[in-house]
Image (tube, rainbow, N blue to C red; front, side):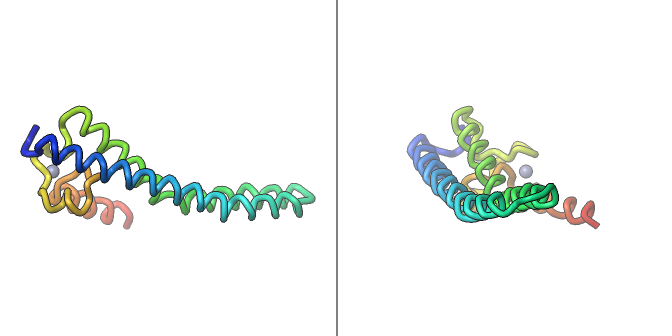
Length: 128
Ligand SMILES: [Zn+2]
């Protein structure tokens, strides 16, 4: 295992698990407050098909709002998996160790700084 002591690994795992629990709470809260009430309200007032359509539209909108959180949850899940497999801290793309300071800030990142910025440039280029 590249450079990460088992103590350090336990520490990282603790941080990831805590973050994951927080995120789940936030997601559940968000669903309850924004979809929960709104959904009930719209269902109560829905009379024809047009209203039904706006109900599902609302649900879709709210779910896409959850996007970033869902992505982060997935990243954390993957990072925990890498801890299990013993390849945590290595870049998913080039296989080199990820900068310790970067891991300190974003323990769930699967990419080193180089690959991350390359990927961002690529994303920008294709978005155009
Ligand atoms: Zn890399």
